[in-house]
Length: 394
Image (cartoon, rainbow, N blue to C red):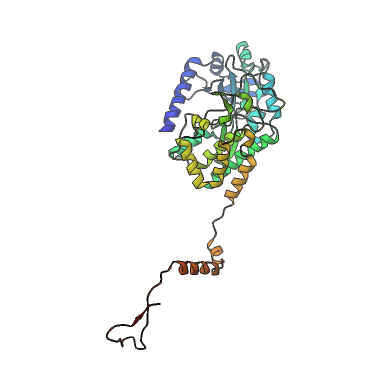
């Protein structure tokens, strides 16, 4: 029910946007049924499944995203167009791709292109016009990643349509922790780890990140318009006098608090789990006050199922600085320890020296068995004096 309600609200909002506010530029491109040669890629917009003649798109607070398909290899691409007044500096966006590690989990950031009006070919008979040239200026073209965002997987888990076993959950924790460790090794931070920006392929359990428009690196300057994170994943110490301070998150360890929350979600989320509108488990107000009903229930369940993970989560929740939150290595060590826990086989149990257990049982018997009356039987147990057995007590 929760999945249906939340997805329905999102669809209705997206549908309204697509029908009434979709850019005529992309609509005309779609209706032409011709591909445009952008860079070295032959691309055309993907049509909305339910609204004929309308390009498939989604919209956020900062940008609108259109989905494209390559005619060369059928790969899918995302064309991100910032809203007026919401765009980021082109030099910042270009440098992000250069400072990110060359790692499959960061493909969305390393393989993207910052387009200009000159990015479209106007000489080979492919689709083009002056309006599209101008519209492309400052937009971002990035490959679609394989898998689903964690918010979608979380909905599936809540509905019982998807089940993850302990090993799979620990593997997801380890892989996300490895990703954050790789970022930190290269003096980078994503700065907006959340259920919407973490993608998971359930077939391979691969984890990848998207949306690298707020990356920290010492060689980058804080963008004029940037994020402090997503609701439900922001550390309480980021807030000062009720407002989030961007500067607090401008550091290498800025992902550690959200890493702790996402790992807890990986470990616990299932039927009956708390739900925030964005799809996570944590309420931002409870995080800011560091207590609350849902937070308490999550902590209690985590402590009972994964005591070591609870210690890491508790340390993050009570930290006053990102550097004091548990490191990715601490989470990896927990995952390795939990993954290596082994239930002994019957043959291993048979090999155990039982003498130790016999001695323990003897001590228990000596300590707990009550003093009882002893009965003396005659040589002939049927020859009872006066018809009764003689009885003595120690």
